[in-house]
Length: 154
Length: 431
Image (cartoon, each protein chain N blue to C red):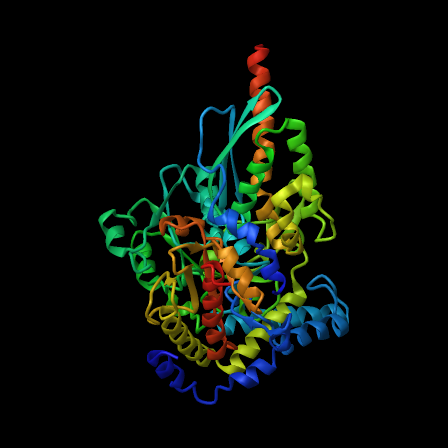
């Protein structure tokens, strides 16, 4: 196996072919659309919160194996977690992707997402791996704002 | 190898055309990517540079560097002479009547923005600007901005199934009419390779009194661009796609038109007299060249044009037509490849875009195709190639593009075709 074949780990290709939690679902408090301007890849993503828990993340999009698989892995990780835990995972994943591969991921925490360590060695593809995560962070912030506005109408 | 491809490979190179000798002039072509020899098929993005161009730039910086026009000492005079000499060389290369018709810019995008800004001064609400759906973003966005500023209406040519401008539909829609003030079209599509009928469209534009702008970024490097017969009023192209350095582009304009256009950027060297109450402006081309220009880059582009002249731009065109024909035939017979744009090497440049599908019908994303080809040393582009509206029109998000130039060989096309087989198997679960 060469470097690029290691990058396309079996876990990534499996998630690419069989995406988890894909498709847009009701209910949700916020929906965002994020694009990767260099390739036109897009993800439309919804977040439903239940108190401080991420109750659901649903999405649809077009993109490369890396962006699609990363979004799929991300939903596995964050659904059912508290917002704080989910944001902590997002921060860890981002650190790993910006490490140029010099990072020892905690497999117990990041689970399937550790497969993306190989992608971190290809700077042109780091953006692909972060697309879904950045949409999730944005949608969660918007969902929190929407929930707060509802509870405290001014 | 398929029969047709073999037949095309057997076609003779142009007389005296020695691709191996040409490749020797480009040191980068001898390098390796990992353990693989580089197969550079991204010249439509940027071309590689021959040693002569790099040497000319180094010679200028190391022995003749001074500012142009304003510096009166020996080095200033030498720099001015080199800069103006490059202008004259490029003017001759494109058949301009005089060097004053050649305006230096930083790239083709700036040249098109210059055209949009200066032509746009006279536009009124309801005036029409015509472009096409196959344009590069640099020939779309400046006109969108101009339309927003002036209230002019932006309209565009659609394309046919084959990927050519749909002239019949344009005729039915009266696309070019008495309200049309500007028509701006690419001479050659950077995605589909289509050569557009610029002269015919220019005649229609001129018949209604409109100005014809041509984006020749993908045309000037690959064949004789003769501004005298093209029919255009303004022509934009860039240096780095034609063996020159980055940071230098050209806007050619008919002198009598340039003379009527207002300045674009204000600053040094573009003025006649500056008073606090107001200034008067220099004649073209200096009116459009505010500030210290890209001097060494102009010198580099002059050397690039010299190189193309030594090889013979007509010979380059014949070589590329041959390689393009070979690539079209080879890729058409590569499993899973769907070619976009004209499939015959007729009125077609050497940019070949395609998609790749696995045996079980799974479309491999262009980024993934690009990445796996890169792991074998093969450089192609994956994305929308700065032509998102065209991809949307084709029902795609993105595609891959292989593009050829004077140094491309049939063996490199073979490497691409074999590489695509590997990518297909990899994503088809046969790794």
